[in-house]
Image (tube, rainbow, N blue to C red; front, top):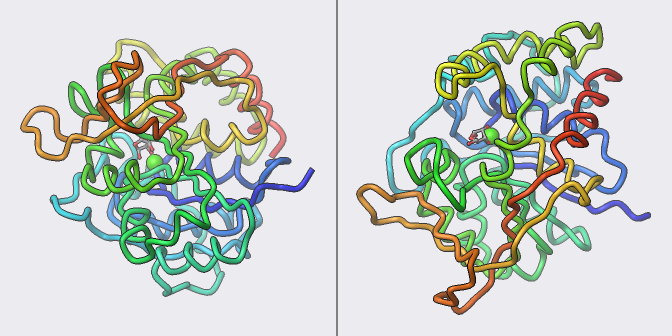
Length: 310
Ligand code: RIB
Ligand code: CA
């Protein structure tokens, strides 16, 4: 089967790190490049982390391009309470010796999109880079088949009462991306929280001797504590891994094709993905496949299998 070429745009934090890892071992898709955006921590750290994670797992040749240091219109909010001040839960990885790319992410992604058939983007951080790409290159929709997003939520919220972090950090960028005309596959916290790594899984991973298992055990402490304080149970969500694994395991996910807009002007609701999952038909377009269900047991089995063997 011909692999789908895709780009991974990330605000490498702890779950992004395992999205990068999963992206290295897909059968049905090939990561042709990656880029960094400010989000979980500031851009200097997300850029360094993405480079170092790829090098740590033996793939410094995959280029990582620098991206936006600030959201389009509002001040940056970060999530160091989950990802640690350095973005990897305090884990210090060796610095990659790969050449330091300087071309802006949105130019590198455009070039890659023009050079590959059936090109896709996976965006697992705030959508600032992708929005700038769309603003700078309106023809990009002719070169990108689909954007798989970790972000948003149809019901509820974790960063706000009605919003998810990636979208709330840059709601203006997100609305540009959702209305770009490029089909969206949205992996919101509706589905990523249902795939949380629970206490018994964490214990099993902590017993692993593999490199990936050790890294998970070492970098997820803060995230696990933050989750436990918030949700009253020992668990951690590896949000960003879901859109990446969807290439090889599409059968694990189930969603609704519907219209989505992002609130950008609300006082309470800024960053809300206003999702027409009940087909109220108030939107002219059904622009997204919004994932709502996941086979958690199968997902955890696949994820733990990956950690155990790398
Ligand atoms: O809300 C979860 C998302 O926000 C994940 O992508 C996590 O890495 C943070 O960026
Ligand atoms: Ca992320």
